[in-house]
Amino acid sequence: MEIVSLLLGFVIIFNIALGISIVFLERKDPTSSWAWLMVLLFIPVAGFLLYLIFGKPISKGRIFTWDKKSRMGIKTMVQAQLRSLENREFVINQELEPYKDLIYLHLRNDDAIYTENNDVEIFTDGVKKFDALIQDMQKATDHIHMQYYIMRSDELGQRLAEVLIKKANEGVDVRVLYDDMGSRSLKRKYIKRLKSAGVMVEAFFPSRFIVNFKINYRNHRKLTIIDGKVGYIGGFNVGDEYLGKNIKFGYWRDTHLRVLGDAVQSMQTRFILDWNQASHEDIHYEDRYYNTGPMGDVGMQIVSSGPDSEWEQIKNGYIKMILAAKKYIYIQTPYFIPDESIRDALRIAVLSGVVVKIMIPNKPDHPFVYWATLSSAGDLLNAGAEIFIYQNGFLHSKSIVIDGKISSVGTANIDVRSFRLNFEVNAFVYDSGIAERLVQSFEEDIKLSTQMTKKLYKQRSIGIRFKESLSRLISPVL
Image (cartoon, rainbow, N blue to C red; front, side, top):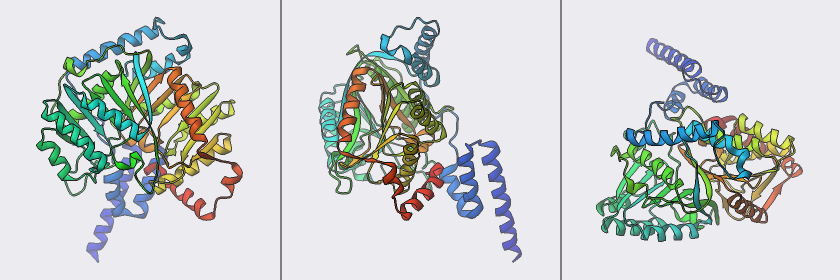
Protein backbone atom coordinates (compact mmCIF):
# COMPACT_ATOMS: atom_id res chain seq x y z
CA MET A 1 0.00 0.00 0.00
CA GLU A 2 2.86 2.32 0.88
CA ILE A 3 4.54 1.65 -2.49
CA VAL A 4 1.29 2.43 -4.32
CA SER A 5 1.00 5.72 -2.42
CA LEU A 6 4.60 6.62 -3.29
CA LEU A 7 4.01 5.85 -6.98
CA LEU A 8 0.79 7.84 -6.96
CA GLY A 9 2.56 10.76 -5.29
CA PHE A 10 5.36 10.56 -7.84
CA VAL A 11 2.87 10.59 -10.73
CA ILE A 12 1.03 13.60 -9.28
CA ILE A 13 4.27 15.56 -8.72
CA PHE A 14 5.52 14.62 -12.17
CA ASN A 15 2.26 15.71 -13.82
CA ILE A 16 2.35 19.03 -11.95
CA ALA A 17 5.92 19.59 -13.11
CA LEU A 18 4.95 18.73 -16.68
CA GLY A 19 1.95 21.04 -16.47
CA ILE A 20 4.18 23.88 -15.27
CA SER A 21 6.54 23.15 -18.15
CA ILE A 22 3.67 23.32 -20.67
CA VAL A 23 2.34 26.60 -19.27
CA PHE A 24 5.49 28.53 -18.41
CA LEU A 25 8.40 27.07 -20.36
CA GLU A 26 7.05 25.85 -23.67
CA ARG A 27 4.59 28.74 -24.02
CA LYS A 28 2.13 26.93 -26.26
CA ASP A 29 -0.96 28.83 -27.35
CA PRO A 30 -3.59 28.82 -24.56
CA THR A 31 -6.03 26.50 -26.36
CA SER A 32 -3.37 23.83 -26.91
CA SER A 33 -2.07 24.24 -23.35
CA TRP A 34 -5.53 23.71 -21.86
CA ALA A 35 -6.11 20.67 -24.07
CA TRP A 36 -2.91 19.01 -22.84
CA LEU A 37 -3.52 19.98 -19.22
CA MET A 38 -6.91 18.27 -19.42
CA VAL A 39 -5.28 15.15 -20.87
CA LEU A 40 -2.74 15.09 -18.00
CA LEU A 41 -5.48 15.65 -15.44
CA PHE A 42 -7.81 12.87 -16.54
CA ILE A 43 -5.30 10.23 -17.72
CA PRO A 44 -2.09 10.94 -15.76
CA VAL A 45 0.22 8.09 -16.83
CA ALA A 46 -1.10 7.48 -20.34
CA GLY A 47 -1.42 11.26 -20.79
CA PHE A 48 2.28 11.68 -20.11
CA LEU A 49 3.14 9.08 -22.76
CA LEU A 50 0.74 10.71 -25.23
CA TYR A 51 2.38 14.06 -24.54
CA LEU A 52 5.86 12.66 -25.20
CA ILE A 53 4.70 11.33 -28.57
CA PHE A 54 2.26 14.01 -29.74
CA GLY A 55 2.79 17.11 -27.63
CA LYS A 56 6.48 17.57 -26.92
CA PRO A 57 7.77 20.50 -28.99
CA ILE A 58 10.51 19.90 -31.49
CA SER A 59 13.92 21.41 -30.85
CA LYS A 60 14.12 24.97 -32.11
CA GLY A 61 17.74 24.43 -33.02
CA ARG A 62 18.43 24.37 -36.75
CA ILE A 63 17.68 20.88 -37.96
CA PHE A 64 18.24 21.99 -41.56
CA THR A 65 21.85 22.89 -42.27
CA TRP A 66 23.58 23.79 -45.51
CA ASP A 67 26.90 24.98 -46.85
CA LYS A 68 27.57 28.51 -45.53
CA LYS A 69 28.55 29.91 -48.91
CA SER A 70 25.26 28.99 -50.50
CA ARG A 71 23.29 30.26 -47.50
CA MET A 72 25.21 33.52 -47.69
CA GLY A 73 24.36 33.74 -51.37
CA ILE A 74 20.67 33.40 -50.58
CA LYS A 75 20.92 35.94 -47.78
CA THR A 76 22.62 38.39 -50.14
CA MET A 77 19.77 38.13 -52.65
CA VAL A 78 17.16 38.42 -49.92
CA GLN A 79 18.79 41.51 -48.42
CA ALA A 80 19.05 43.12 -51.85
CA GLN A 81 15.33 42.59 -52.50
CA LEU A 82 14.40 43.83 -49.02
CA ARG A 83 16.44 47.03 -49.52
CA SER A 84 14.85 47.51 -52.93
CA LEU A 85 11.36 47.26 -51.40
CA GLU A 86 12.24 49.52 -48.48
CA ASN A 87 13.69 52.15 -50.82
CA ARG A 88 10.71 51.86 -53.16
CA GLU A 89 12.96 50.81 -56.01
CA PHE A 90 11.33 47.40 -56.42
CA VAL A 91 9.85 47.20 -59.92
CA ILE A 92 6.74 45.07 -60.35
CA ASN A 93 3.69 44.84 -62.57
CA GLN A 94 1.39 47.76 -61.73
CA GLU A 95 -1.58 45.54 -60.83
CA LEU A 96 0.59 43.77 -58.25
CA GLU A 97 1.65 46.95 -56.43
CA PRO A 98 -0.83 46.34 -53.56
CA TYR A 99 0.90 43.03 -52.79
CA LYS A 100 4.46 44.26 -52.32
CA ASP A 101 4.08 43.96 -48.56
CA LEU A 102 3.23 40.25 -48.97
CA ILE A 103 6.47 39.79 -50.92
CA TYR A 104 8.29 41.69 -48.16
CA LEU A 105 6.71 39.49 -45.48
CA HIS A 106 7.96 36.27 -47.10
CA LEU A 107 11.40 37.71 -47.79
CA ARG A 108 11.84 38.82 -44.20
CA ASN A 109 10.32 35.79 -42.45
CA ASP A 110 11.38 32.94 -44.74
CA ASP A 111 14.19 34.15 -47.04
CA ALA A 112 11.72 33.49 -49.88
CA ILE A 113 13.30 35.07 -52.94
CA TYR A 114 10.87 36.65 -55.39
CA THR A 115 11.29 35.66 -59.05
CA GLU A 116 9.16 36.77 -61.99
CA ASN A 117 10.48 34.79 -64.95
CA ASN A 118 8.54 31.59 -64.44
CA ASP A 119 6.23 29.49 -66.54
CA VAL A 120 3.51 27.63 -64.63
CA GLU A 121 1.22 24.79 -65.67
CA ILE A 122 -1.71 23.81 -63.42
CA PHE A 123 -2.80 20.19 -62.89
CA THR A 124 -6.08 19.30 -61.20
CA ASP A 125 -6.16 15.67 -62.36
CA GLY A 126 -3.79 13.02 -61.01
CA VAL A 127 -3.48 11.02 -64.24
CA LYS A 128 -2.41 14.10 -66.20
CA LYS A 129 -0.05 15.24 -63.45
CA PHE A 130 1.81 11.95 -63.17
CA ASP A 131 1.92 11.45 -66.95
CA ALA A 132 3.64 14.83 -67.25
CA LEU A 133 5.95 14.09 -64.31
CA ILE A 134 7.04 10.75 -65.78
CA GLN A 135 7.67 12.33 -69.18
CA ASP A 136 9.93 14.94 -67.53
CA MET A 137 11.71 12.26 -65.48
CA GLN A 138 12.39 10.22 -68.61
CA LYS A 139 14.23 13.23 -70.07
CA ALA A 140 16.50 13.65 -67.02
CA THR A 141 20.23 13.66 -67.75
CA ASP A 142 21.78 14.80 -64.45
CA HIS A 143 19.52 14.34 -61.41
CA ILE A 144 16.01 13.65 -60.12
CA HIS A 145 15.14 14.87 -56.64
CA MET A 146 11.77 13.54 -55.44
CA GLN A 147 10.03 14.16 -52.12
CA TYR A 148 6.55 13.04 -51.05
CA TYR A 149 4.68 12.76 -47.77
CA ILE A 150 2.99 9.53 -48.90
CA MET A 151 4.60 6.99 -51.19
CA ARG A 152 2.99 3.64 -51.87
CA SER A 153 4.37 0.54 -53.54
CA ASP A 154 1.17 0.10 -55.57
CA GLU A 155 0.70 0.36 -59.34
CA LEU A 156 1.63 4.06 -59.53
CA GLY A 157 4.54 3.53 -57.13
CA GLN A 158 5.85 0.70 -59.30
CA ARG A 159 5.46 2.80 -62.43
CA LEU A 160 7.57 5.57 -60.90
CA ALA A 161 10.09 3.01 -59.65
CA GLU A 162 10.66 1.73 -63.18
CA VAL A 163 11.62 5.21 -64.37
CA LEU A 164 13.76 5.97 -61.30
CA ILE A 165 15.67 2.68 -61.67
CA LYS A 166 16.15 3.19 -65.40
CA LYS A 167 17.54 6.67 -64.83
CA ALA A 168 19.83 5.52 -62.02
CA ASN A 169 21.21 2.82 -64.34
CA GLU A 170 21.93 5.55 -66.91
CA GLY A 171 24.10 7.39 -64.37
CA VAL A 172 21.54 10.00 -63.31
CA ASP A 173 21.68 10.91 -59.59
CA VAL A 174 18.31 9.89 -58.19
CA ARG A 175 17.28 10.83 -54.67
CA VAL A 176 13.93 9.89 -53.11
CA LEU A 177 12.79 11.28 -49.76
CA TYR A 178 9.58 10.16 -48.04
CA ASP A 179 8.00 10.82 -44.68
CA ASP A 180 8.29 7.81 -42.37
CA MET A 181 4.82 8.27 -40.85
CA GLY A 182 3.01 9.21 -44.04
CA SER A 183 4.60 6.33 -45.96
CA ARG A 184 4.29 3.75 -43.19
CA SER A 185 2.67 1.27 -45.62
CA LEU A 186 5.59 1.50 -48.07
CA LYS A 187 7.05 -1.99 -48.40
CA ARG A 188 10.68 -2.60 -47.51
CA LYS A 189 10.97 -4.74 -50.63
CA TYR A 190 10.16 -1.66 -52.70
CA ILE A 191 12.81 0.44 -50.95
CA LYS A 192 15.38 -2.35 -51.23
CA ARG A 193 14.70 -2.64 -54.95
CA LEU A 194 15.30 1.07 -55.47
CA LYS A 195 18.48 1.08 -53.40
CA SER A 196 19.92 -2.00 -55.11
CA ALA A 197 19.55 -0.17 -58.44
CA GLY A 198 21.52 2.83 -57.18
CA VAL A 199 18.60 5.07 -56.18
CA MET A 200 19.36 6.99 -52.98
CA VAL A 201 16.37 6.64 -50.62
CA GLU A 202 15.86 8.25 -47.22
CA ALA A 203 13.03 8.58 -44.69
CA PHE A 204 12.28 11.79 -42.81
CA PHE A 205 12.26 11.35 -39.00
CA PRO A 206 12.36 7.54 -39.18
CA SER A 207 11.56 5.35 -36.19
CA ARG A 208 14.73 4.50 -34.28
CA PHE A 209 13.12 2.84 -31.29
CA ILE A 210 9.86 1.11 -30.42
CA VAL A 211 8.26 4.54 -29.99
CA ASN A 212 9.06 7.37 -32.40
CA PHE A 213 8.99 10.56 -30.32
CA LYS A 214 8.97 12.69 -33.49
CA ILE A 215 5.97 10.93 -35.01
CA ASN A 216 3.80 14.02 -34.58
CA TYR A 217 6.11 16.15 -36.71
CA ARG A 218 5.68 15.12 -40.32
CA ASN A 219 7.24 16.29 -43.55
CA HIS A 220 4.13 16.99 -45.57
CA ARG A 221 6.01 18.52 -48.52
CA LYS A 222 5.64 17.26 -52.11
CA LEU A 223 8.42 18.35 -54.42
CA THR A 224 10.15 16.99 -57.50
CA ILE A 225 13.05 18.77 -59.21
CA ILE A 226 14.51 17.44 -62.46
CA ASP A 227 17.94 18.56 -63.69
CA GLY A 228 17.46 21.81 -61.77
CA LYS A 229 15.15 22.99 -64.56
CA VAL A 230 11.69 21.57 -63.91
CA GLY A 231 9.90 21.65 -60.56
CA TYR A 232 6.65 20.15 -59.29
CA ILE A 233 4.85 21.38 -56.17
CA GLY A 234 1.35 20.81 -54.84
CA GLY A 235 -1.01 18.37 -53.16
CA PHE A 236 -0.74 15.03 -55.00
CA ASN A 237 1.09 12.17 -53.25
CA VAL A 238 2.21 8.88 -54.81
CA GLY A 239 -0.55 6.27 -54.66
CA ASP A 240 -3.29 4.79 -56.82
CA GLU A 241 -5.97 6.73 -54.92
CA TYR A 242 -4.52 9.95 -56.35
CA LEU A 243 -5.41 8.60 -59.78
CA GLY A 244 -9.00 8.06 -58.66
CA LYS A 245 -8.61 4.30 -58.24
CA ASN A 246 -9.83 4.11 -54.65
CA ILE A 247 -13.41 2.84 -54.24
CA LYS A 248 -13.95 4.78 -51.00
CA PHE A 249 -12.86 8.19 -52.34
CA GLY A 250 -13.54 7.88 -56.06
CA TYR A 251 -12.22 10.74 -58.18
CA TRP A 252 -9.37 12.63 -56.49
CA ARG A 253 -9.51 16.40 -57.00
CA ASP A 254 -6.21 18.10 -56.19
CA THR A 255 -4.03 20.96 -57.41
CA HIS A 256 -0.38 20.70 -58.46
CA LEU A 257 1.95 23.04 -60.33
CA ARG A 258 4.66 22.33 -62.89
CA VAL A 259 7.16 25.18 -62.78
CA LEU A 260 9.92 26.30 -65.15
CA GLY A 261 12.12 29.30 -64.28
CA ASP A 262 14.11 30.63 -61.35
CA ALA A 263 11.49 29.64 -58.74
CA VAL A 264 12.76 26.08 -59.27
CA GLN A 265 15.97 27.16 -57.53
CA SER A 266 14.03 27.82 -54.31
CA MET A 267 12.32 24.43 -54.64
CA GLN A 268 15.74 22.82 -55.09
CA THR A 269 17.07 24.56 -51.98
CA ARG A 270 14.11 23.28 -49.97
CA PHE A 271 14.71 19.71 -51.14
CA ILE A 272 18.44 19.86 -50.42
CA LEU A 273 17.86 21.14 -46.88
CA ASP A 274 15.36 18.33 -46.21
CA TRP A 275 17.59 15.72 -47.82
CA ASN A 276 20.64 16.78 -45.84
CA GLN A 277 18.67 16.49 -42.61
CA ALA A 278 17.40 13.00 -43.41
CA SER A 279 20.52 11.54 -45.03
CA HIS A 280 23.31 13.43 -43.24
CA GLU A 281 24.90 13.48 -46.69
CA ASP A 282 25.34 17.28 -46.76
CA ILE A 283 24.91 18.09 -50.44
CA HIS A 284 26.91 21.19 -51.32
CA TYR A 285 26.07 24.00 -53.69
CA GLU A 286 26.69 22.96 -57.29
CA ASP A 287 25.73 24.82 -60.46
CA ARG A 288 24.14 21.68 -61.90
CA TYR A 289 21.45 21.81 -59.22
CA TYR A 290 20.53 25.37 -60.27
CA ASN A 291 20.36 25.09 -64.03
CA THR A 292 17.41 27.45 -64.54
CA GLY A 293 16.80 30.40 -66.78
CA PRO A 294 13.99 32.81 -67.67
CA MET A 295 11.04 30.83 -69.02
CA GLY A 296 8.01 33.08 -68.59
CA ASP A 297 6.63 36.11 -66.76
CA VAL A 298 4.91 34.64 -63.70
CA GLY A 299 5.96 36.08 -60.32
CA MET A 300 6.44 33.58 -57.51
CA GLN A 301 7.82 32.91 -54.04
CA ILE A 302 8.38 29.43 -52.61
CA VAL A 303 7.57 29.60 -48.90
CA SER A 304 8.32 26.93 -46.30
CA SER A 305 7.11 26.52 -42.75
CA GLY A 306 7.55 24.00 -39.98
CA PRO A 307 7.63 23.42 -36.23
CA ASP A 308 11.33 24.35 -36.19
CA SER A 309 10.49 27.92 -37.24
CA GLU A 310 9.82 30.87 -34.97
CA TRP A 311 7.08 32.14 -37.31
CA GLU A 312 4.18 30.35 -38.96
CA GLN A 313 5.22 31.61 -42.38
CA ILE A 314 2.54 30.07 -44.60
CA LYS A 315 -0.26 30.90 -42.17
CA ASN A 316 0.96 34.49 -41.97
CA GLY A 317 0.96 34.61 -45.77
CA TYR A 318 -2.64 33.34 -45.83
CA ILE A 319 -3.72 36.02 -43.33
CA LYS A 320 -1.97 38.76 -45.31
CA MET A 321 -3.71 37.60 -48.50
CA ILE A 322 -7.12 37.45 -46.82
CA LEU A 323 -6.81 40.96 -45.38
CA ALA A 324 -5.67 42.30 -48.77
CA ALA A 325 -8.83 41.07 -50.53
CA LYS A 326 -11.21 43.72 -51.88
CA LYS A 327 -13.62 41.61 -53.97
CA TYR A 328 -13.43 37.89 -53.27
CA ILE A 329 -11.55 35.04 -51.61
CA TYR A 330 -11.79 31.48 -52.95
CA ILE A 331 -10.46 28.71 -50.71
CA GLN A 332 -10.21 24.97 -51.34
CA THR A 333 -8.99 22.76 -48.51
CA PRO A 334 -9.70 19.22 -47.34
CA TYR A 335 -9.22 20.21 -43.69
CA PHE A 336 -10.67 23.52 -42.54
CA ILE A 337 -9.89 23.98 -38.84
CA PRO A 338 -8.60 27.56 -38.68
CA ASP A 339 -7.19 29.02 -35.50
CA GLU A 340 -8.59 32.30 -34.19
CA SER A 341 -6.29 34.46 -36.32
CA ILE A 342 -7.44 32.91 -39.62
CA ARG A 343 -11.05 32.73 -38.46
CA ASP A 344 -11.04 36.41 -37.47
CA ALA A 345 -9.38 37.45 -40.74
CA LEU A 346 -12.07 35.65 -42.74
CA ARG A 347 -14.85 37.10 -40.59
CA ILE A 348 -13.45 40.61 -41.05
CA ALA A 349 -13.28 40.04 -44.81
CA VAL A 350 -16.92 38.86 -44.96
CA LEU A 351 -18.15 41.72 -42.77
CA SER A 352 -16.24 44.14 -45.00
CA GLY A 353 -18.23 43.05 -48.03
CA VAL A 354 -15.69 40.61 -49.49
CA VAL A 355 -17.21 37.48 -51.03
CA VAL A 356 -15.71 34.46 -49.27
CA LYS A 357 -16.24 31.04 -50.85
CA ILE A 358 -14.86 27.95 -49.12
CA MET A 359 -14.97 24.46 -50.61
CA ILE A 360 -14.47 21.31 -48.51
CA PRO A 361 -14.92 17.56 -49.17
CA ASN A 362 -18.14 15.62 -48.69
CA LYS A 363 -16.47 12.68 -46.94
CA PRO A 364 -13.75 12.14 -44.34
CA ASP A 365 -10.38 10.50 -44.74
CA HIS A 366 -9.77 11.39 -41.06
CA PRO A 367 -13.12 11.36 -39.17
CA PHE A 368 -12.32 13.71 -36.27
CA VAL A 369 -10.69 16.20 -38.63
CA TYR A 370 -13.72 16.06 -40.91
CA TRP A 371 -16.23 16.79 -38.14
CA ALA A 372 -14.06 19.65 -36.89
CA THR A 373 -13.98 20.95 -40.47
CA LEU A 374 -17.79 20.94 -40.64
CA SER A 375 -17.98 22.79 -37.33
CA SER A 376 -15.53 25.47 -38.48
CA ALA A 377 -17.32 25.81 -41.82
CA GLY A 378 -20.57 26.32 -39.92
CA ASP A 379 -19.02 29.21 -37.98
CA LEU A 380 -18.00 31.00 -41.18
CA LEU A 381 -21.39 30.23 -42.74
CA ASN A 382 -23.05 32.13 -39.90
CA ALA A 383 -20.72 35.06 -40.55
CA GLY A 384 -21.80 35.20 -44.19
CA ALA A 385 -19.31 33.02 -46.06
CA GLU A 386 -20.49 30.69 -48.82
CA ILE A 387 -19.65 27.04 -48.10
CA PHE A 388 -19.59 24.39 -50.83
CA ILE A 389 -19.38 20.63 -50.33
CA TYR A 390 -17.55 18.92 -53.20
CA GLN A 391 -19.49 15.85 -54.34
CA ASN A 392 -17.43 14.45 -57.24
CA GLY A 393 -15.07 12.31 -55.16
CA PHE A 394 -12.54 13.65 -52.66
CA LEU A 395 -11.31 17.25 -52.59
CA HIS A 396 -7.65 17.44 -51.50
CA SER A 397 -6.70 20.73 -53.16
CA LYS A 398 -4.98 23.36 -51.00
CA SER A 399 -5.42 26.67 -52.81
CA ILE A 400 -6.38 30.28 -52.12
CA VAL A 401 -7.18 32.91 -54.76
CA ILE A 402 -7.57 36.63 -54.00
CA ASP A 403 -9.40 38.99 -56.38
CA GLY A 404 -8.13 37.14 -59.46
CA LYS A 405 -4.68 38.65 -58.84
CA ILE A 406 -2.66 36.46 -56.49
CA SER A 407 -2.90 32.86 -55.33
CA SER A 408 -1.26 30.17 -53.26
CA VAL A 409 -0.97 26.48 -54.10
CA GLY A 410 0.95 23.94 -52.08
CA THR A 411 0.81 21.41 -49.29
CA ALA A 412 -0.53 23.42 -46.32
CA ASN A 413 -4.10 22.85 -45.20
CA ILE A 414 -5.97 25.41 -43.13
CA ASP A 415 -5.55 23.69 -39.79
CA VAL A 416 -3.35 23.69 -36.72
CA ARG A 417 -1.40 20.65 -37.88
CA SER A 418 -0.27 22.32 -41.09
CA PHE A 419 0.50 25.62 -39.40
CA ARG A 420 2.38 24.33 -36.33
CA LEU A 421 3.25 20.64 -36.59
CA ASN A 422 3.94 19.76 -40.23
CA PHE A 423 6.79 20.78 -42.49
CA GLU A 424 5.02 22.41 -45.44
CA VAL A 425 5.83 24.27 -48.67
CA ASN A 426 3.63 26.54 -50.80
CA ALA A 427 4.02 28.52 -53.99
CA PHE A 428 2.70 32.07 -53.61
CA VAL A 429 1.95 33.17 -57.16
CA TYR A 430 1.66 36.79 -58.27
CA ASP A 431 -0.04 36.51 -61.64
CA SER A 432 -3.60 37.25 -62.75
CA GLY A 433 -3.50 34.59 -65.47
CA ILE A 434 -2.77 31.81 -62.98
CA ALA A 435 -5.28 33.24 -60.49
CA GLU A 436 -8.01 33.37 -63.14
CA ARG A 437 -7.34 29.76 -64.16
CA LEU A 438 -7.67 28.67 -60.54
CA VAL A 439 -10.91 30.65 -60.28
CA GLN A 440 -12.24 28.89 -63.39
CA SER A 441 -11.40 25.51 -61.86
CA PHE A 442 -13.14 26.53 -58.64
CA GLU A 443 -16.26 27.59 -60.51
CA GLU A 444 -16.28 24.32 -62.45
CA ASP A 445 -16.04 22.49 -59.12
CA ILE A 446 -19.04 24.45 -57.81
CA LYS A 447 -21.11 22.72 -60.50
CA LEU A 448 -20.09 19.42 -58.89
CA SER A 449 -20.84 20.61 -55.35
CA THR A 450 -23.79 21.30 -53.08
CA GLN A 451 -24.02 24.54 -51.17
CA MET A 452 -24.31 24.37 -47.41
CA THR A 453 -27.03 26.78 -46.31
CA LYS A 454 -27.85 27.95 -42.81
CA LYS A 455 -31.11 26.02 -43.00
CA LEU A 456 -29.38 22.76 -43.97
CA TYR A 457 -26.69 23.25 -41.33
CA LYS A 458 -29.28 23.72 -38.60
CA GLN A 459 -30.98 20.47 -39.65
CA ARG A 460 -27.97 18.27 -38.86
CA SER A 461 -28.67 15.44 -36.43
CA ILE A 462 -27.85 15.34 -32.72
CA GLY A 463 -25.21 12.69 -33.50
CA ILE A 464 -23.43 14.98 -35.96
CA ARG A 465 -23.63 17.91 -33.52
CA PHE A 466 -22.04 15.73 -30.84
CA LYS A 467 -19.24 14.63 -33.21
CA GLU A 468 -18.61 18.26 -34.19
CA SER A 469 -18.44 19.39 -30.56
CA LEU A 470 -16.06 16.59 -29.57
CA SER A 471 -13.85 17.13 -32.62
CA ARG A 472 -13.78 20.88 -32.05
CA LEU A 473 -12.71 20.32 -28.44
CA ILE A 474 -9.71 18.21 -29.43
CA SER A 475 -8.90 20.10 -32.65
CA PRO A 476 -5.78 21.80 -31.16
CA VAL A 477 -4.13 18.37 -30.77
CA LEU A 478 -5.41 16.66 -33.93
